Each structure stands twice: as C-alpha cells, then as structure tokens.
Length: 154
Image (cartoon, rainbow, N blue to C red):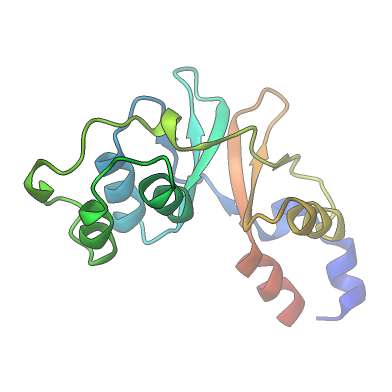
C-alpha cells in the first residue's frame, strides 16, 4: 500500500467497529476489569443514552492515583497492572466513578474523516485514540495510533 492510498483512506477504513465502552457510574475497578478483559488500554465513556461523553485510559488511572493531590492508595495500581483488578486490595480503593477520572470532551471524528486529518488531530491533542461517532454522538468505532501505523505499513 502506498502513502497515496493512505491519504485517500478515511476513519471507517481502519477503525475498530463497535468499540468496547465504559459507562458513566462505573467504578475504577469496573473500568479496570473492562480494559483488562478486553485487552485494551482505553475506551470511550458513554452516558445513559449511549452518547460519548468522555474517554478513559490506563494513563488516566495512573494520573488519578499518583497525582500530587491524590490521597488514594496506589496499591490498587499495583494490583491493576499485575492483572489483579478483581482483588479487593484490602479496601484500598474508595468508590470513585469513571466520571471523576475520565477525560471529558474526547477527540471525536466522523466516519468519513481522512486519515491525515485524523493523525494531525491526534498529534496536536497528544492522544492515542479518536472516537468515531455518528451524527448524534453515538460511538461507531475507534481509531488508535496503532491503527494508523498499520495503515501506513500496509
């Protein structure tokens, strides 16, 4: 595949359809389990209607637990990255909903967004995933930086 071909591709050509989504109200442990079980590093967050309201990633978990203002026990992160998201951690984690650590206003794109434009937006925003949404804000796919690399590699 040539670079010229990549230039003519659009988001729907490389996206993962029907992305795994976290829902408002899910706890840290539920989100960690969702990411672990699906072997993904991030996911769109949807509201009760199914519209995208944010995005959550393993990086968000780390920032929330290790930030200067955090008073949460980082032991949960050790358990999470060890693949033990089901463990109760000795009660180390108070209830924390996904809305408290997700990134609001995620980068979104329409299915017909050209890949060069998508890559530019990802680089400018310094993100690794773009949520592909329909005209009403429902997630129809996700494009990751790895998807873009695969498209270039052919």
